[in-house]
Image 1 (cartoon, rainbow, N blue to C red):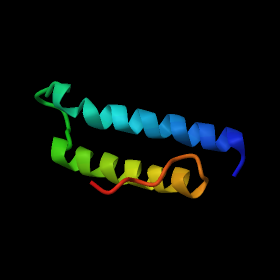
Image 2 (image 1 turned 135 degrees about the vertical axis):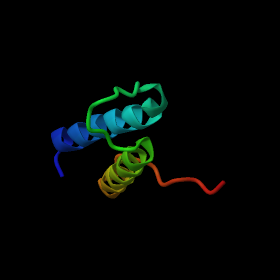
Image 3 (image 1 turned 90 degrees about the vertical axis):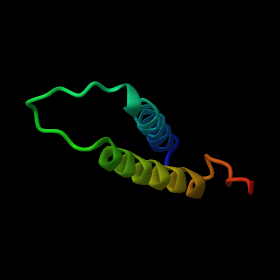
Length: 67
């Protein structure tokens, strides 16, 4: 994987994390099609975890520490 690709994945990872962290501040608009916040959170978490795995495999992210 090239450096430019790793940087793009890193930027996407940051955006996904930001969207996930800001879910509670989204306003509900009546009369429009919506997904439940919990469904969106699940999707963003899955995408974020996959991006973390890609970056870890590329050596651009440290292994998670045991808590």
